[in-house]
Length: 310
Image (tube, rainbow, N blue to C red; front, side, top):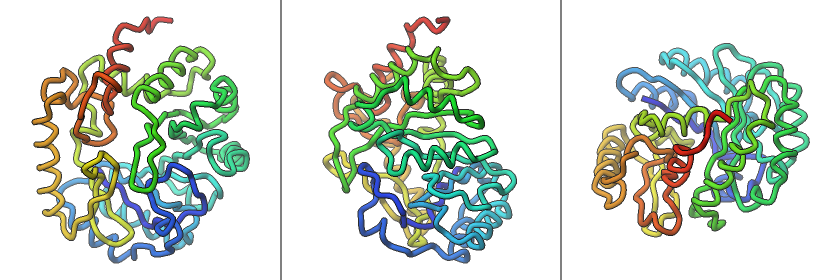
């Protein structure tokens, strides 16, 4: 079992693609440590990974964040990952047994120069997540890769697909994301060799080998700032929205129904990569002829025939 722990929606940035509404991003409400502990304790069995993000967790008090980390350690989490926008570097980011990820979209991210400077100052290994948006499609990839190479402690980089949501629909297609990943792969010689490109080195390599995608097959539950459990869902038009649950068993029933939908989907049920694709979330595929799918089947097919010895 994996847990995404969101202590707050509040954020000091206003990214144009964010799935949270302006009201949520301005809401200072934070889940209490006692409620967070209660929810963690309600989850049966072992917890493999806890991902902590928001909102922006670096704006929370150091006492609160040390307390939250202690709860995760006490619950027996095998790994704790924290994702931050990098606008500040509080001392708890150096807590032991943490992996740190920065969200950085080059010039498409607010205060991108300041965040880059902070990443340069951060003297422990870290990863970077970059959301591919219409803005990002216009950026100079060569220049961005040059800047990534200048980050001494960067060890991996991942491109994340934008998902249309109730807050905004920027019109990015699956194929545009696939084309961006392809471009980076074709420019791979420019990237410092010790930096892992997650989309290629892990996701695509596993897909072409037929290895299961843990994001698809593993149970991942959210703990929300409201104190409820949650998970990603979609409305009738395919826009991303959050579902919330009063108790663990309600989430289990919902998750089971979502799996049945995907297994019964006209396209997914016949796909050779079912459970092994690159999907971020379980999403019902409506068509694949015009725009691939959110499992990125066209990218996998392309990569399968790509000369990976180059």
